Image (cartoon, rainbow, N blue to C red; front, side, top):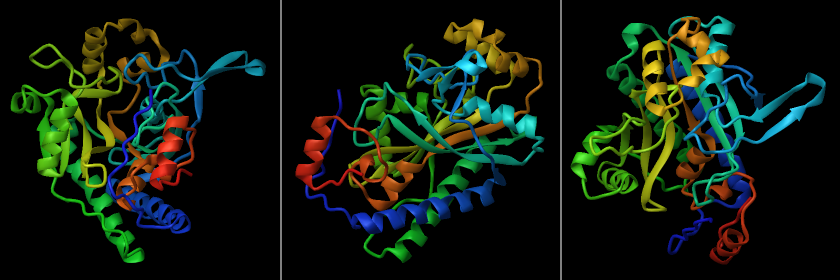
Length: 335
């Protein structure tokens, strides 16, 4: 069932026409700054991958991929959920060196996504990944990269506001880092999402670290697939969204699993059988480079910087009647 929030007194800062121009400026400006900061090169990426290769992102393990047969190839394909694992394979195949990385425009369909102000079944991300060495597999390097991404977002906002003075969005550059266990200890009586909201409301820009493993109370802060991020070296970038008055995730990222952490996490997740898939066999055999990477939501970044109330104001998707009616009454123009 969809969930819709209508902010009281909401009025978009830009017309529909100017919104399109602003989206173009954000996407062009941000990716230039990100690529420069992280030493990334654009590559072409797939919309779908072959079923059974282990390349598709399993997300939380319950989401159904959109699948179809390819008669002439005699196989079945799945529309990607994300390119978390494909990117790592590509880095090795394309011969990227340590310190170099790639980014791509990733388009996905997540058919089981609950529709809301910030969730659509259509997902558009800048998926990025870079080769690192063993010495960089630590929290210090992770935090440094997070700050570079946040700086790219804030720099983009500054240029955007020069071009469109009516935009009033304010973001904080300084990132506050906290682990999921520290968050649970700080707010023991709140749910995971309530903890994120309370902490982000106070600190404005945060990176929630160590997502996927169980906390000391036996619960998980949030689900993560066991075969791309190292659960000890990952996290989410959140900004405080003044329009929606809530935490606002723009990126899930992390240092990727090595052979040891992959084995440990497959066992914890109860899916050791994945070790026999082609991607996993290659990783366990040391045939893939050590990497870090993530996805940065294109529509999420546009929505945040433009001060939009609904993701449908910056992307074209399909919405239920309840959402369409509520937005029309509130003057929220869905594209």
